[in-house]
Image 1: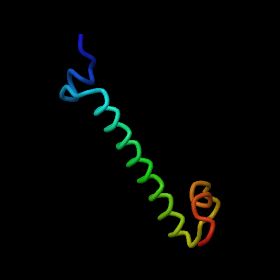
Image 2: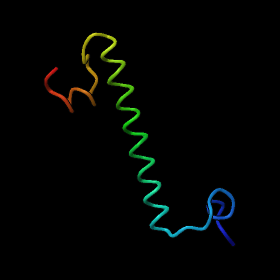
Image 3: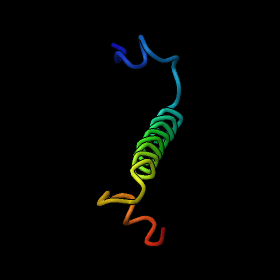
Length: 60
């Protein structure tokens, strides 16, 4: 019996292709979230106490 993933949502693909697609999507989502946080902090006029941002860029 096919899984819901293969049977309904996606055409049959190799596991490697599927994993690559999932990883790419996860990276894109993480980048979007980081970008949103960055823009929000910038609107507030600084880096505030936002962990992700202060960790990634020590100078502003």
